[in-house]
Every structure is written in C-alpha cells, then in structure tokens.
Length: 237
Image (cartoon, rainbow, N blue to C red; front, side, top):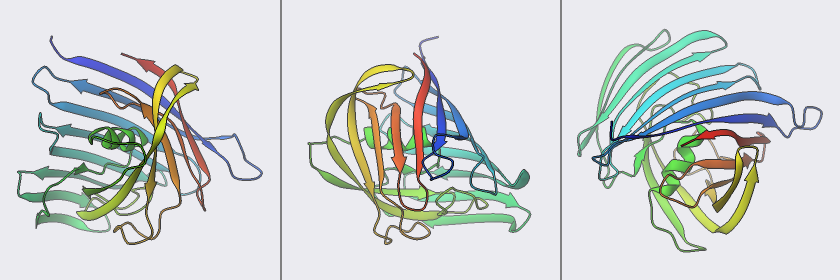
C-alpha cells in the first residue's frame, strides 16, 4: 500500500450560557491520501444540540488537481432518515442522484460555474481541508466557489445541488495546543454576509488548521446564534 492515512476525532461543545462547555456531539474522520495525488475523506458527524439531532455520513473524493470527483452523503435528522445522495463533477457539469421521504426520487444536472473549488460537505474537518487547497498570504481574502448537497447551516436537508460562494480570510500563523497535541497552525475566518447562497447569513466562524499540506482542523468556533466550539481530541498519521 502506497497511500497514507490520517485519522482523528473532533469534540463538539457549546458556548451558550447555561450549557457552556457541555458536549453537543462529535465527528470522526479519515483522509486517504493516494500515491497518485487523489484524496478521499470519510467522516461521521453527530450533532446532539440543538434539536433536532443530526447524524451525517459522507465519502468525498478529490482528484490529483484538487477538483471534486464525487460525494456520497447519508443523513438522519431527529433520529429519522432524511435522505441519501450522490454528487459527481465531470469538469463541466454537477449531477445529483438522491432520495428522501420529503422529496422522493430526485435527479439533477447543473452546468457548473468554473472554476470549482470543491464540494461543501458540512463535516467540520472538511471546512479546514477546503481552506488548505488555496495558496495564501497573511491578510488575504479569497472566494470559494463550491457546490453543496444542502444550503442549510447544519446541512440538515435532503441532498440537492446548492451553489455557494463564500469568502475565506487568512488571519495569520501561530502555535496552537489542543487535546490532540501542539501544532504549527494557520488561523482563518469564513465570512458570509448573507449573499453566499447559504440559508441566511452565517455567523462569524474562526478556525485553525495545521500549517502543512494536510490542512487538518485543530480548533474553531462559530458565534452568533450558534455559539459552538470544535476541537481536535485525537489524531493518528
């Protein structure tokens, strides 16, 4: 085997008054970095707070040029099946095949606005990875052109093609210590004033990722009505 594996676990906690520091879920992930440059991310996410709960499983593959290839997603909301779907990008067209009790059987094809920066998949670790796919200068802001299976902030809707353009800002480099260890890190912000294509303005989102090609999410939090915190608690490379 010539591929390389990166495995880890994120803890989800709350920063809301009254439940500050309490667990609100977790995420496990595995990156497979293949010898030919392709990457596959597998992630399992469970959000326990706020209700309704969300459980998500994804498999997302990227080619050696950083272009999205395909995405499989299965979603449970309120511990009931919400939907499952498959997205594919052929360099020009995004297609989606999905099913959910509220939408039935769905087939979509959309001419992509190029260039495409990736699929938005909703796991927290994928947010960090997306930021690592661009070259950055401190203080630089860049726009990500992505396609998602859900425009909902928690991704809690049946899989359908959604187009989002969201800004990322590189704040700077620093050393970060989390439960999984101490790392050289890059600090970023996602910025959304409500015009990105997501379902409403997204609260401020700060996150730190490893300062290397792997771009592993280390810690981060979302303000506003969410008041959430995420931290890497286990890592194996």
